[in-house]
Amino acid sequence: MPVCRAKDRRTKIRSIRAAVLRMLQQMLRSIPWPGAASAGLLLLTIAGPVYRAADPEKLELTAEVRSTVPGSFVSLKDGYTHYELAGPPGGRVVVLACGATVPYYVWDPTLKALTGAGFRVLRYDYYGRGYSDRPDIAYNQDLYVRQLTQLLDALNIREPIDLAGLSFGGSLITSFADRYPQRVRSLVYVDPGFREPYTVEDIARVKSAWEFFTAVFEENTWAEGQLDDFLHPERFPDWPDRYRVQLQYKGFRRARLSEAISNEKANQSAEIIRVGRHTRPVLLIWGKQDTNVAFENSADLLKVMPRAKLVAVDSAGHLPQWEQPDVVHTAWIAFLNR
Image 1 (cartoon, rainbow, N blue to C red):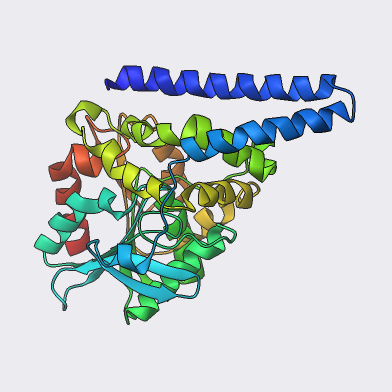
Image 2: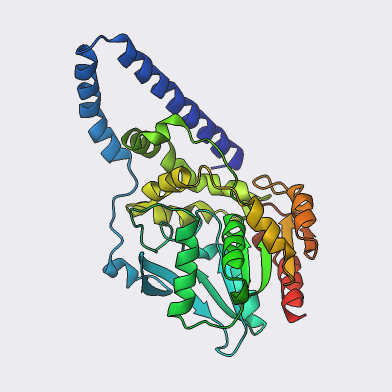
């Protein structure tokens, strides 16, 4: 599907979802009690089959599934974590933290470039994403920091690491570096995003309603929506299909809801300032045509991280390591070697 048509389709679906929700709310308000209760019961009777038919999450993430996929697994406090550790055993360890929802394949070209340059590279799936477990808990910053800390300990990685974060990964690596400064040798931010307060939509506070409307109207559009991260999405026709794999497994949608609810009041301003004052080297890589996290935000980040070096990547959107790999990885390797 052409990208422009995919965007139009997602916009229409969101409009339909909002219109249906408003219609149901108005209908139930207009019916006097106990008629409203009867109408609600009727809606639930109809909604069940619709929900089950539309829901893409029909499979369980089992040991049998794990045995068929590449990478490795380790059991941590909150569940199994899917990871890959590659490159020469004696190389300096570089850890790659993903964006908000895309599994660790988002780092494919970077893994190849860094291991080829002699570095030992660790990448992994967050809880709730990819092939990592989807525990029914709060998906807050503490969870993500705890997962990374326990993963490093389980793999006996004790020396300071070169830590990189893409998009939401920028938020995570900032929290990790703030809490464990002695464990981080350098930081690399790629089109980073950070926690700041927001307001979730009202329907998200009613879990069953949010689950229904998201499964029926939105979840099946999430894969196509990942193409918005590219300046030239036509060059990555398989991207939605790769993302769609994780949507099969139960718990992905629930994790996204918990993510939204659990971090509504989170604010990283103080963390960013403290990390920016540290003397460790910092590299900032940013696609100049990023429509997800605007390139102009880099100026604000440089103000609080004055030691950071900026690499502005032209002809690249939110994933410059895919659209301009030579530019990104040449600068990245040079930074690490210095």
